[in-house]
Image (cartoon, rainbow, N blue to C red; front, side, top):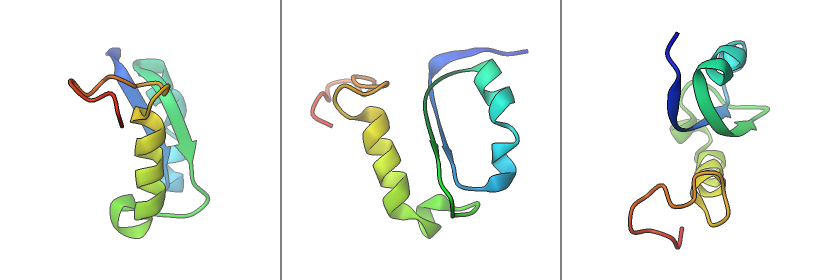
Length: 75
């Protein structure tokens, strides 16, 4: 079993992926999770606003991965 130490985010839009959440949590440093009632396999195409919102909440100020992007503290 591999354990990933980098901050890891889950933005679940495809219900088939929801079944794998437990495994992902066990093997990853999950610091952010978001589940969406609709969407599919291509969230950037199908639900771009929801994906951008998740990214902002993941990397924004006072968020789980704040400061992960070198030189950027204003996200």
